[in-house]
Length: 403
Image (cartoon, rainbow, N blue to C red; front, side, top):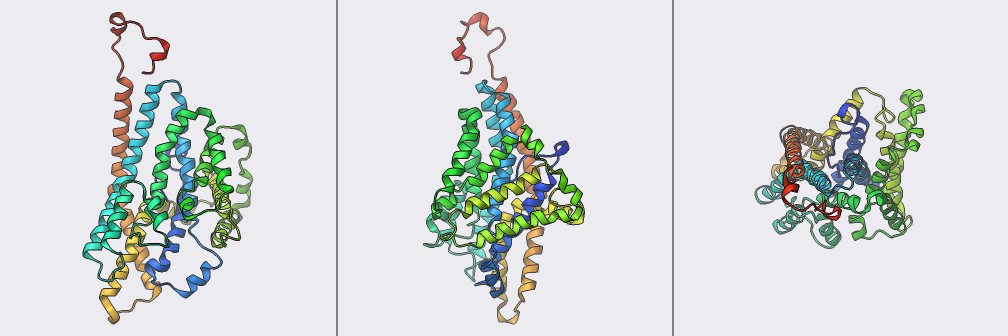
């Protein structure tokens, strides 16, 4: 899912190409969920399209982006304080604080609104049962929604917040990655390679699909490679000479992802691994932030705008679909909206709510979280013995310096 990340790019700004990838990913996921969530039970032409191209691959693209962005920001910080347990603890604690304030307030807000809609705006039953949504809300708040999703799929009702499975998986990743980096140090790359190779050999059951981490691992490996010479040597600057024609490459890669997502898992059991690899190629092209995916212009600015709000769009789009279904149900047969108008209303409402969420919740709380994290880190690092303490206490042994 489109979990927001630390700023990355020239002058501490955002990487515009990464934002474009986020936009493409969230548009694909939102379109995928239209079938069945907004258009119920579905439109024939979309069903026909899905036989040849599906767009849920946006989730794996989000995973690759998150693995790269988070590792690119976190790994140098942890490496800078290697050997100093206190500074490492301060760095990891500050990272977790930033993630908390960046992600959970918006996630919990929309979980609450879904519950409210289930109680007060659900004559059509679009939002599902209260019990299912209560259980889904609890799973989302405890960051175990991916395990509930794996257990529920094809067996019982999950609830209207089913997209939270990917958020839970990413938050588990954010919790474990810093600890693994501290324990494994420079060998974190071997663990990431092992995760990729292991999942390449496995058939993806519903449980394994809900804990798939190959795209996250590949994103981390890309981040590890960035300071190296090979990353600089592989810079595809020749793409700039192709001018507008260079958009053919990302378009072909995205078409490949859509086709892979539509293939039969029994006929192609390794398709998820290939989707993760192709997604990482797109993130690699975007990582240079040099317009390799798309020339600068109005269309790119629009994608950057969408990408910046992709987290809110991801959280909001399914509740909006269900809300519009409820409104159509209440209007009854007196007003039958054509599919194009219903889609336009959904897009407009999602854009409005996502922008409000971004401006008045995400951004202010992100800045607040940054301040809280800085204060925490400074206080933690300052918790040391006074300078006169060695004169009063025995000198600590080297083994006790980090305690």
